[in-house]
Length: 121
Image (cartoon, rainbow, N blue to C red; front, side, top):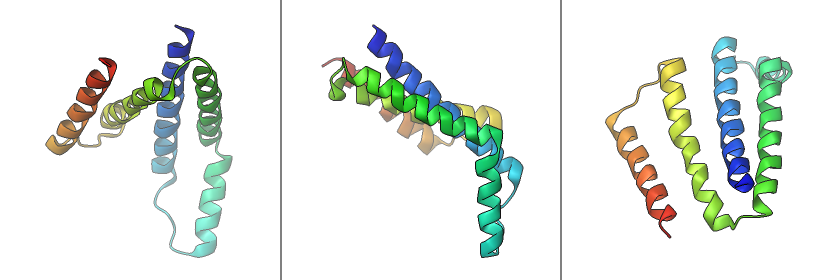
C-alpha cells in the first residue's frame, strides 16, 4: 500500500511542478527577442521561489518514485504516470482557461481506457 502512495505522491509532485512553472511563465510574460534578454528571462525564472518549489517538487517526485520502485514492478507502476496527462489538462483548464477540445477529451478517454485495461492484468 505504501508503494502506491509513493506513486500517487510522484504524480502529485509532478503535476504541481508543471502547474507552478506554467503559472510563473505566464506571469513573467513572453520570451524576449534578444539572446541576452532570453538568458536573463530564464535566469529570473530559475530564481523565482515558485519555480524553485517546482524543481524541488520534481526532486521529491524522483525520491518517491525510487521508493515505489523498491516494491513495485515498473510495468505495474508506470502506467499510473498517465494520470499526469489527465490532471494537468484538468488543472490547466480550471486555472489558466486552456481549452479542453474534443480531440483532447478523446485522447484522455483513451488514456483512461488504457489505465483501466492495464489494471485488469
